[in-house]
Amino acid sequence: PLACITASFVGCVCWKMQGWSSHNPVSTVFGKVWLILQPMLFGLIGAEIDLKELRLETISSGLAVIFGALVIRVICCCFVLIGGNLNLKEMLFVNLAWLPKATVQAALAPDALDMVRRDPNPSQVDIDRGEQILTIAVLSILVTAPLGSIGITLGGPRLLSTGAVTEGEDKAKENDKETATERV
Image (tube, helix red, strand yellow):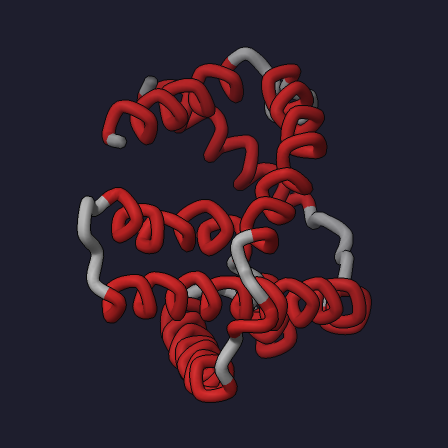
């Protein structure tokens, strides 16, 4: 994992030094591959759920956990953004944009159930817990993805404004680029 983080950081810095910040061919290829693989990822996670076996208690407690976690995430996001140079509308938009977290849930949710199934003699309690984790992850995807998408689509134009870059801001950005290049 550390090698992946380091490689992505070094790649990003090198690409910016080569002037790839506006058009990155690697990003273009990954974007096209993701268009193909994303529906497969979410389709496979949805295929794991048997709607006939869903229990109301799992759904209701799962929704309570999801909304509780979202409230905590919004509060933490506000605390993190307080020190930044954002106004209240921009902070609200960041919170809306951070609502959907479907990719991680889709990738990791089946792992708990798969680990139980690999056990030669799994207990029914462990199987039930694995299925509950999977169900709550799918609920999280079904709740947060549309909320985030609607929030970004409707909130973006209303909460964000495009302002002209002043000469001082433009020079500050140029100085930051020069300083970053000198450090590397």
